[in-house]
Length: 340
Picture 1: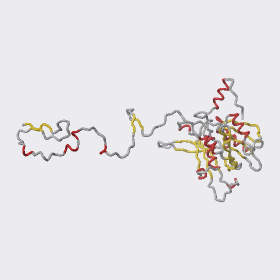
Picture 2: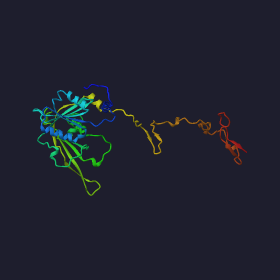
Picture 3: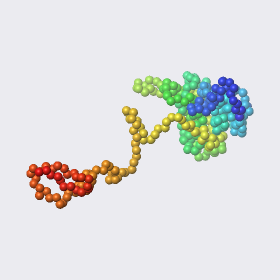
Picture 4: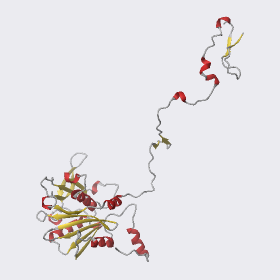
């Protein structure tokens, strides 16, 4: 681990602020290393991967006596010194020939690692394809085909998918320019067999990585006709040793920071005028117990007709009904007041 020193100059202060955690992190940078023994095929494959991610990549040419699965302290040192979170380490030995080790770090600590065993017989570099090359910094489309990538449990294939997405992702963007969709990365996996031995990499399904140029041509319709042409590189891998991430470290790495943006409140919206409208969910109401304005004239007892009052005793001619309301503050029922 590097010593944490207080910056003495404005330049060193800006460098430390650049490395500090941010709400929107910078694009991940990949570091390419080679071991003491590295075959030419592995070096060519790493050169092609470096050319596809040249804007966010660093490459070392010297040999490094590093064994990632035995001691990863050297890789974490290089990661912190160069501010890189992705590491590609190329090596070759008699037991594991043509090996590219993908490693990811979090907070300059090793998160996970996975070995890719390259097949030298089917490997083709970018220079062997006589096609137009994509511009530097172009983001590709990515396609993963195969049931091995859909496993609900973390395994070598799901880890490989996550690592390849991190490697080719590039700068985050919220808008897409159709003219910028110039090439596509297709990763397919063979169907796993029941006789496969988990400890033997040669029996595991093969991982095929292909890169294609996307060409649009006239079709006589509104939508163009899309054709693909192989761009390179062409790589076939078998997955080897794997180091899965620690559960606590993975949870911390996947945690999203809290933002100052106001959270959307449920059942509250704005209409076209700009007024705030709220929806309240209530249970069934008993309207008979609803509290209303108290008026003596609206009581139920006032609607009962007095049986002692006989309309036949009063002549109807020339009679004018003045009021049928309660007269006075007393609660007794009053007869209809008439005027002769």
